[in-house]
Length: 301
Image 1 (cartoon, one colour):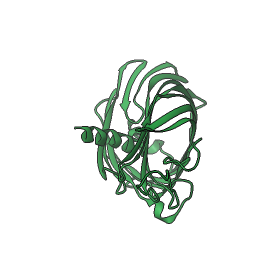
Image 2 (cartoon, one colour; image 1 turned 90 degrees about the vertical axis):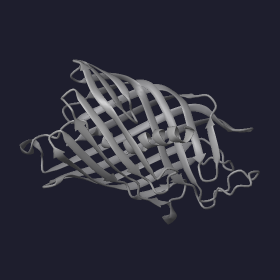
Image 3 (cartoon, rainbow, N blue to C red; image 1 turned 180 degrees about the horizontal axis):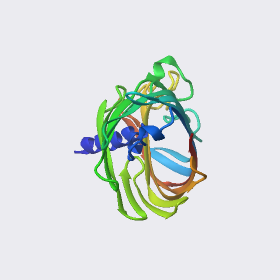
Image 4 (cartoon, rainbow, N blue to C red; image 1 turned 90 degrees about the horizontal axis):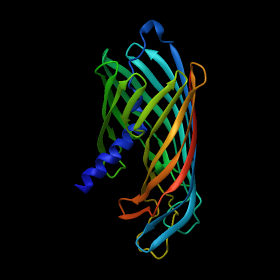
């Protein structure tokens, strides 16, 4: 049962991290779609001082910066809308060298995908992110190519169901399921229960939405081949696979800046994080939480 819950949890994070959960609205009619579109997203988060532990071993009072930048080109084709671009993400931890947790995790990947539809109410997304998922040094052995195949069923204008499967051959669970729902149950209220960002949203005005919810993040990385870790530990962690997971809970606001641009501000508490060398059975878990604040900007044109 414990492994099943972990599988489902990591599956939800993995799938949604590849953005198919954003497919909750029907595409515009052919006459309304430009032959070529673009998307750009940038995010930054600061997490205050927190601790992790593994038995008697502890890493105390380290803070974190997480950043992400993504650019997509969206050409329209007879079979659907292609998703072509690139993404860079970094987790930078204020952790000293010589410990079993790296001070940096980063990924740089291409994005290759397709949005299409089987009918007006059944949308499909395929998206792969071939690239390098590394610690400090980006090397050839860090290459990985996770992908998802997901979709959305538009039951009505107020209720959508999201579902899919993700594949990561380097993961502890190579094939994992995921899903969620989006329900507009009142004129200004939306239950957006699609991970990794399940939320309860309130549309205060046309240009301002408030929300309360969570953000679940999980990704696999390969640490450096000269990553010694803690010399007291007999296990060799050089070149080991590491899954980093964190859960954020908070409140936020999304403001529209015109028709194509949005800015989001969020603050709250990070109650859980985990550094898991799942093949070496070495796992550091949070001992207490930490406050965080984030800002993001997204635009489509």
